[in-house]
Image (cartoon, rainbow, N blue to C red):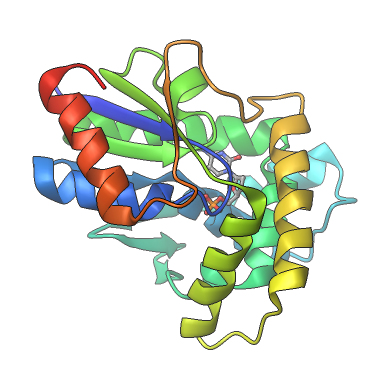
Length: 219
Ligand code: DC
């Protein structure tokens, strides 16, 4: 029986780095669900849709959308879009389109299906609450908005994007409000998830702490 470790939290809290490290350490697959929402957003954008699209338009664009992932790469209709999904535009529209019911339903099966193939470290916004509520371990990874903006700006600069930290903070706050304020599967801490605030902690600190919890079954 495959196992799943579920991690939720806001943008820039360090979920993907931690999830990747945990997956490597435990020999599990890393499931980056944000990447799936980003790929769907690209698909809808390529179809010419934006936040004003009707539910019907979104549903019919999804019928022509095929998302897959392997070895840490994400494919949209067989094309590797792993780089493209990291752009600020894809970030913005992933957050916008992820509030649509049709988009969430479209990705639900893809995410759950991954568990049939391997044990997972799955991270996103609704891993602990909706997609894998029965996960063997649940974490909510948080950090202050200022620290998350700093990390995001640094990450985007290393990818060649020219970004201002101030603008990043505004973007992060806007995405937080949208991801937590939506009606369907909003970001929230599951009652049985353990919250870890990574503000001021190194990646290594957070990784070691989570690993200790997983190994000893206690904080
Ligand atoms: O984790 P990320 O920044 O790559 O996610 C991009 C967007 O996708 C995020 O703003 C909200 C959405 N998302 C979601 O709604 N549910 C998930 N499980 C993962 C991401």
